[in-house]
Image (cartoon, rainbow, N blue to C red; front, side, top):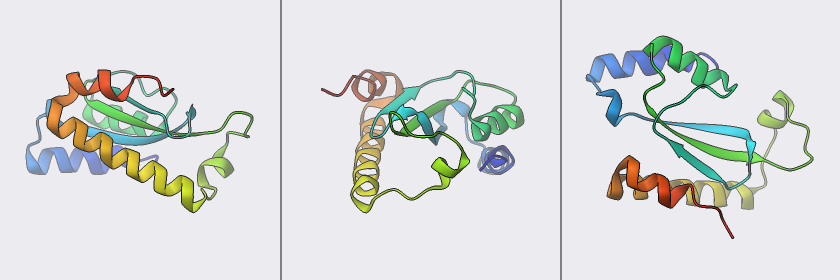
Length: 121
């Protein structure tokens, strides 16, 4: 995943994808579990996969959906990222992720940001 920029660049070039239509979905242990953040552009935020994609596309201007996998008080290192999620947590992340993708397809990126990024109560 840390070198995913090569595959993304090849995909974008092969299918002639306009970067305004590209959505990259990444995990983020700095965001609480089940929290999603949609951005239209930005830095890699310390995420090596995003760093690779930005490097290979030569731009930060593409949408990214960050999927929170973090827990307060948890050790945040490669063992945490590569660790197992409970089946219940996994189901919830996938269900909410799919729901967010439908939101984006139905509303576009800009309008979806206000829907997806609102704080959970």
